[in-house]
Image (cartoon, rainbow, N blue to C red; front, side, top):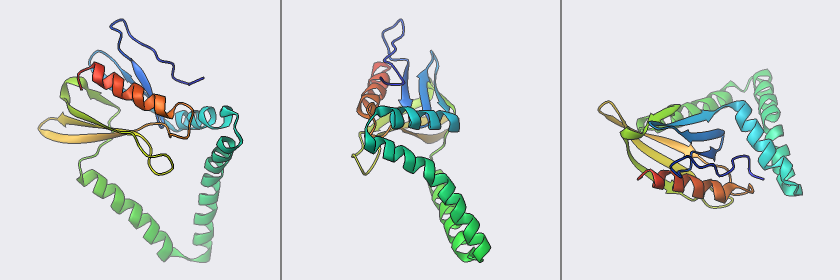
Length: 174
């Protein structure tokens, strides 16, 4: 069973859809993004561990082990004096984040519906990219974009989440 049932409002619109780290939900005036680390952990647990298949369980264990292995690597690099390697990794992350900001991407917790100029959807390719929605909106006189990553296509509800997200925006004229 999906963690986000197909809930419709009085006007027969989808009021929410699952995203990678939580839920996106519509109100009368805005779209709200409820994202958190606990929400992400819960989504991983429900979508991978509770699926009942051994390979989904393996993906979940991989996610769980990635964090402590990453911490171990950083600690061993610091202990070993590999500061150049750490600087390269941190520098690369900073550069990639800056490039994203220069391209106009922001991550607001909510976007007013009347400021949205357009919505594009990419269905993703299993094993390569995840489905995502890109919302183009105005904030003052500046145009920004908000990337909304959806659940992986490897999850039981990945394709359904993509279709619900598209339908939710289409029902609102986007």
